[in-house]
Image (cartoon, rainbow, N blue to C red; front, side, top):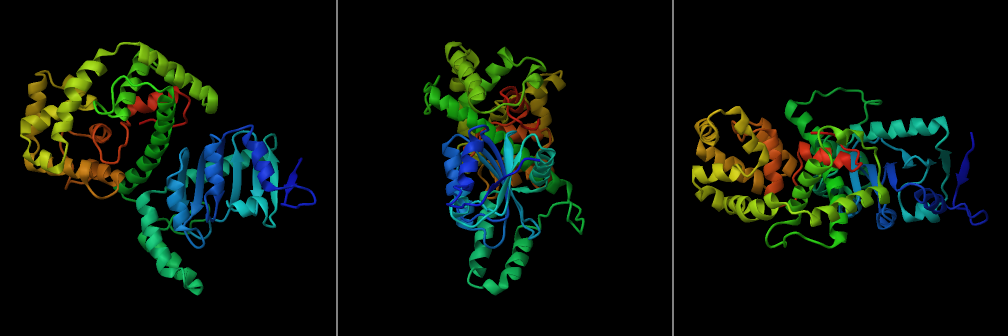
Amino acid sequence: MNLNLYSNRNSRSDFIQNAVNALIAKANNINIAVAFLTDTSVLENLSKQGCKVRIVVRLGFPTSPNALEALLKISNIEARFFSDRSFHPKLYIFGSSGALVGSANLTHSAMTTNQEIMVHIDAEDNIFTELVGLFSEYWEESKVLTQQTVEDYKKIYDSFKSLSSDISKLETEIHKKIGKVVGTNIRRDKTKQSKENIFIEDYRKTYQESVSAFNTIRQVYEKVGKRKKSESEIPLRLEIDSFVSFVRDKHAKKESWKNTPITSGEPQSSKIRELVEEWHQTPWPYFEETIVNETYPRLKAIFASENAISEATADEIFQALCTLHSFHDRLRFYPGGLETLKQEFLGKNDIGKVKESLAYLVFGNTEIIERMANLIFNNKYKLNVFGQSNVQELIGWQNKEELPVINGRTTKILRYFGFDVRQL
């Protein structure tokens, strides 16, 4: 075993930051598991250098809610959390190049001036493989850090920050409000989750991965500097959605998307850039004419506001929903065609409930994943003849959060471009 030691000694210039710089030169995918997060300067620098980071932190003193808020605003970063005090690692994995393990939390001072001890584990060492597996366990068992979670944490943290002797009370309040999130290897109690909660957590993780990957495509698309249509005609996220359809039809046919190796960085960006250029040179009438001039304006008019949904007729709502590929595809189950599907949808749903549920989905005040889950599982909101794929697609077409369309077609193309995302 060949180990390199880093401890921020001036006499040896063995600064942890030097090790980080050397490792990110070889790999731009970084996985981090740290107990505490008090500033984001290191993460901001990693993002500026084009690194893609997955980070797991612990909610609890001294993790700063301000740092968590800043974390969610940094591009190319996916964040998850545990809330139990047993989560206390300091692990940094740099792609397949190596790892750092030791005492340093993720702060600028820890990287440069604090008296820390970090050991570099070479990728050829068997321990490296174990560390990669360990981080995978952390990633799967932790929960996605959302804006709502940070807001809840901030309220609890602020109420206890002046009471250093009451840290255990702070932790208790976190568990009450946010939940006790603890790894299975140290969990003493087994809490049975409802089907709804299992869906919410699983889908939130899948959605986080997919949105992060979509945003990488968006960044490349924007750097190309071209649009088929202006933002005033159609949002960029929907133009990119049609680009995804183009790639699926022309390049990722049938199951070929499965054979693409996982990749990142410039090789991935180059592939995306090449197909974006091809897309701009290829006429695509269904997008340029049908979607831009017919289907999107129709859906946009009905879902412009809660009031617009309320005032729409049953026929207008049905026609707007037919904009969704997943909803229109239901026609294959109805020999009578569109009219039969219309009778089925309107016959099995009270139009008042349809309006209330759709308005809640698009304009509700709770977290978007929760709203989606309620449309799928909760009988108060659930609609007949309108399933999970329909809910997901409608959110992509019209939402106040400016989120993209994420469905089975999208995740296949994300995988085709080399992203490691789960399939829907």
